[in-house]
Image (cartoon, rainbow, N blue to C red; front, side, top):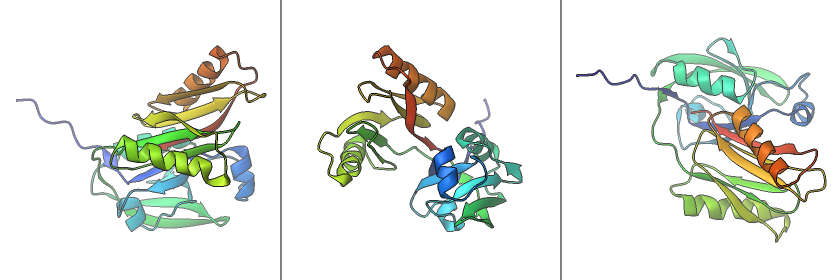
Amino acid sequence: MQSPAPARGYIGLRVQEVSREIADSLGMRKARGALVVSLYGNGPARSGGIKVGDVIVEFNRRDIKDTGDLARVVAATPVGKDVEVVVIRAGNEETMTVKVGAQGVRLPGALAAGACDRVGYALGYDNFDAAAAAALQDCASNGDRSCKLILTIQNNCASVAVDSTCHARGWANGSESQLAEEQALASCARQGGRDCKVIQTICDAD
């Protein structure tokens, strides 16, 4: 009988890439790490003191350059291990301890888009219908009535891109942030977009 595969590490959060603009707004000298955008229930991350808005820059004594780094390191960490996590919060580095759990079933999410670069997202819902409704509500929170559902999140990462005139938009799922962004940019270009740029990427860091 074949032995079951070892459980992947899980800490219960979703993250997005840290852009230069985000880094500047947080007082960071350079863009690095993974920005926490959502926490799942009372999972390991929340229990360990991690908060939405934290930027994870080190996990288990390994530097985190981006969301892909974090996803790989978390998944490879033994379940039950207590690890040190370094975050940037309010411009300062803080260290906390998180006990890594076992990965369960990923919960549905969705992306919605409105005028030009207005994007709404919803993460960790019980079903795709609920996630879609929440994403549309988030997109419309500034009064934008043009919001529409563009993507349900089924893989680790999802990305949205628009061109400089806002006339072309592309989106994609991917196993890692770089793949999702490349596919979103390609989708935008196929619609005739020029100077397409990524405006939103979110990832499940497990």
